[in-house]
Image (tube, rainbow, N blue to C red; front, side, top):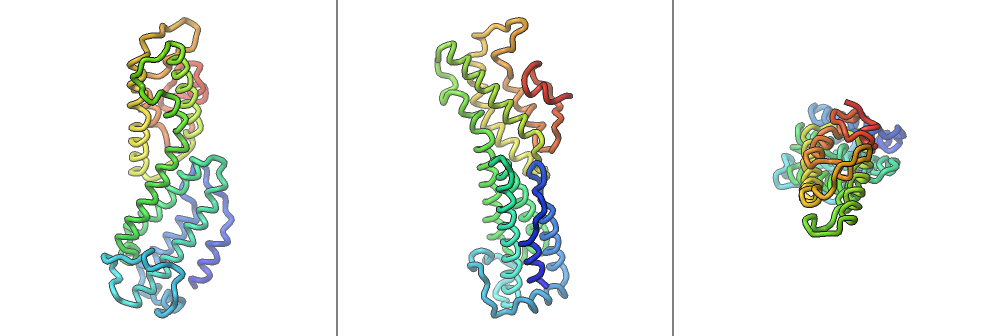
Length: 277
């Protein structure tokens, strides 16, 4: 039974979801594994496919934990090994699907969303008793690494557009160029990511808070230091296009998978031209 299930995972050829959402394969596999753990008869089928003395292709550290519900029971250890292997097969398949995105940041967001879903299903079901707290902790840490990689790849141009010391005295023209680079980089990142999604509300809020901490303090300091140097000219796009609080408003719109923004940018910017209230 499980051999056929594993083969079906490996043969899956469905497309990656738009916006880096949780893949239907991830939902199917994890719901099926939760079902197996909820019914003792299904667990007997697992043991029939995977005898107690069978060698697992996984190292023991992958799934074992002193807090695992399996303890020293060889039957529970065999079940845990088989389930851990199936989850790993799924994750390897997702790695292959992630590279199909044409944006590296989106690939990492896809992996974070899917691994977060896997961990949540394990943690909130009987799977957690078998996989153990250590597995949950290690896998949750990997979700955080994927998120960090997404943030780095998706927003590094925005952060690097400002001076390392945002309060340092710099020539007027250099400050003007920094504002220009920031405007372009922020609008490009925002516009591209308005259709990206983080389905889990907790993870979504965590990422938004993290991005705000990465971007807002440096821009706020730079804005306060240099914004007074530029007078607004009629008919000319403003050099200081965003107030610091604008950034929080824009970031709050992200990760719902919608290209419609509830916040209006300066007229003429690429953000305002592609979004409406």
